[in-house]
Length: 210
Image (cartoon, rainbow, N blue to C red; front, side, top):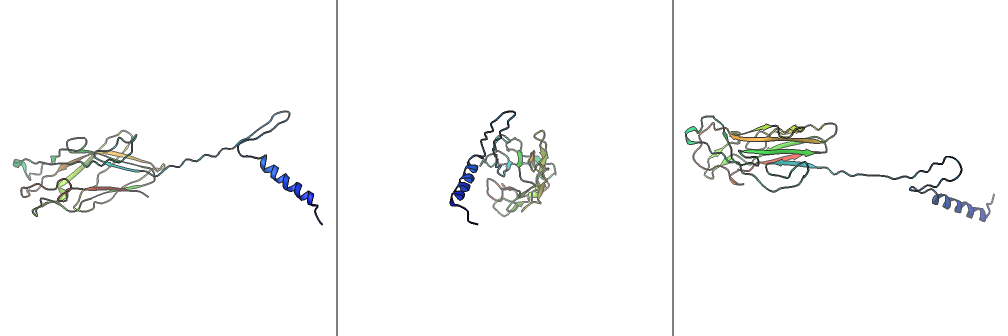
């Protein structure tokens, strides 16, 4: 059956008009009695992944998560009369003083793995060394409501991994005071071991997440 050309035109115009009177953000409904009009709005929020690691001087988390290039120097000076007697020696330096550093991790994408890496034992530039096993790190609570952030055990290479398990929210807030001390169990030759990024004096802490 042949459809008249005029009817085809009317059908096409009707479809066009229908598309014009059903917009997403406005609706006119007129007449007697109770009337209902609806309009639609779509929302989207894009949250980026964040992984914040601080050991020592850094930004004022959680209000400011930003990078800071400061590298703190922790120094230990055992007294001559007690050298090698096994009594631990507290350090100097650190952003909290007395060889104590602020340590923090804030993230929002699941579990986080933390490790510490040294490039070898502390050296004096003359062939003498002190192993990193002579430096201990004790973690204590810092911020109320945060998970305690344990410290990796330092070695002359890469430490064992510490895994922070994220809760159901996938958000981790962990921090601690890390107090460093020199265990003082040996009597190395006289000298200055390590330093500001010399003689294997720098340890790099690395956090990773999926």
